[in-house]
Amino acid sequence: MKEYTDSEIIECLRSRQSYVIRFLHDRYLPMICLMVSRMGGSKEDAMDIFQDGLMIMIEKLDNRDFELTCKFKTFLYCVCENLWKSVLTKRKAAQNYFLKKVDDDEDDFTEIMDSSLYESIFLAAFETLDPAGRKILKLYWEELPPRKIAEKLGYSYGYVRKKKCLAQAELIKKVKRHPDYQKIINHEGLSESLAPSSPDSMQSDMAIGRR
Image 1 (tube, rainbow, N blue to C red):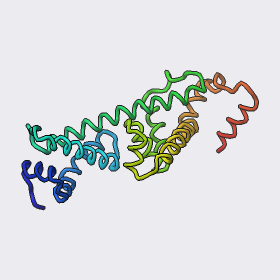
Image 2 (cartoon, one colour):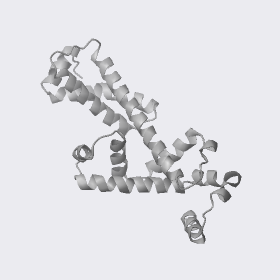
Image 3 (cartoon, rainbow, N blue to C red):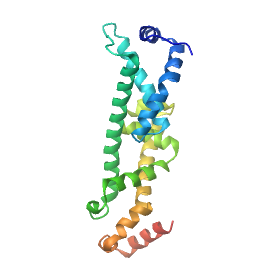
Image 4 (cartoon, rainbow, N blue to C red):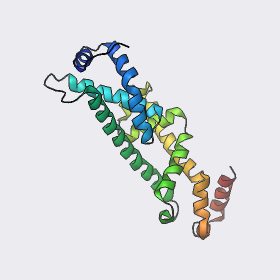
């Protein structure tokens, strides 16, 4: 593999030379994958973060007044690390929001469920969504506008809006049906305190439990 100096990389990025993008991908993507995986992300997450990181780098380099004060590799790593930490923060907020919505229909029993169990239930339910739903929700949690999501994923604006609502509803439903969630509800008499107030709702819950 041909090596490039930092100054060569910068000039090639400014002139949009595709070969240097391939070089950066081959040379530095494994480093970003390792960082993301150590912080709980997937290879797909790392690919997205790497691409977004490169776009930020290019935007900065297009400003001729910008000066790189460290190695390109170090700067790229820091940009990607900050991006991933931001994503994790927003996903955590989204996770708490959805689990709060799940709890809205029941009494508050969060004191007996620690955050790690909440997270495992949420992530397990999330991973069972279809790929399109997962991608759209991830980008929503990163506060990307619907039209930008549509452009990024190649979907129509209407599809993104509809799919987001369907994926949210499905995620909440899957969390409620998760075995660990059901165990917590039934733990230490909670099933009685959370019992439906009407026979019809009780039959509905029983039907859900049998699925």
